[in-house]
Length: 208
Image 1: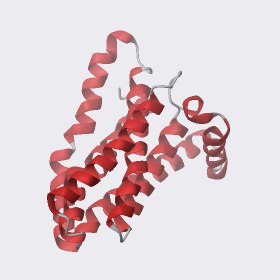
Image 2: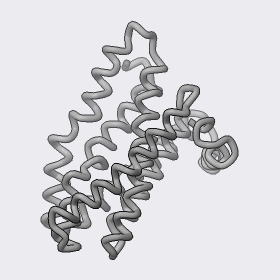
Image 3: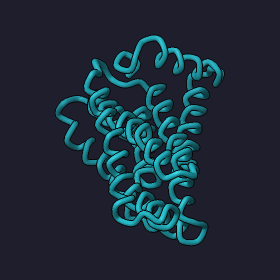
Image 4: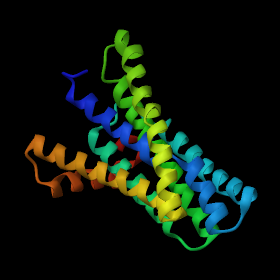
């Protein structure tokens, strides 16, 4: 794995997303209770909205026909981070619930693409070992990220957890994009154009 820079970049991105971004069991509950005064019913509605987005993301991901590219991973991670930030800042409960639908969609798109990128990038006999590392990166950071997000929300406000997690994910996507540009010796604007063209012209499945 140390000799596979493409896989290490993917695992690093997965670690950041799993540690700081995918903590909705904490952030959604805090928003429902402390910001919107909705209690358990409000948390359920926010969770259902997120789940609807996840379902849509899973259906879209099922159309994939080839290994996801790094540009798709970067753009999907950036979309997820931006969506999470917007959802954490919106003032209305129902508007926040609506914003969690694209957030869930982007979350599944990037995590599914990362999973496929890793599995399809190694020999079949190595997939079990590599996926063990993948799951360690995805789930292993939760014991550190969840308490940190909870602490930040308690100190700086309930919105801070979701907004802060989104900012970290967005920063990670930007850093990965800059690293790709440096490795390929291409201007960042070129990578942006390539990613935009893939999403706009070739469709979700072809871009993935």
